[in-house]
View (cartoon, rainbow, N blue to C red):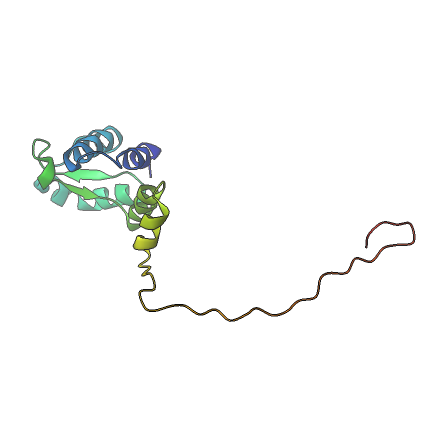
Amino acid sequence: MDARILKQVQDARNASRQDIANGLVETITQIGGEPLTVRMAKDELSAVLGQARNGIPKLIGNRKKTEDMTLVISLKDLAELATAARQGETVGEALDAIGFKPHTGGRIIVGQGRKREPLQRTGNADGSLK
């Protein structure tokens, strides 16, 4: 996946959906060329899929209607984008992402730990520690 797309996703944390879409269209167009029409994508499907597998995303649709466009990328690149989007998140967001649910019941009683004896230092004849 091209680093410019990853950077675009990471930098978009506080942008509106439309700004994110517009930025992605610009970046992906720089990398993969102008968007294809549906007919062109259908006629060149093998080539489009081959490019996606090689890390070159392809847009399909009318550039004037970004909300109706479709993006073809590999699953590997989608996972990389998801990882990039999650970087920089708060601890709470990371916990939410993995489905963490805090304990909401009563008190949690923790038993007393094992009693441990303090470590004993033993020395060498020259006074250094073993």
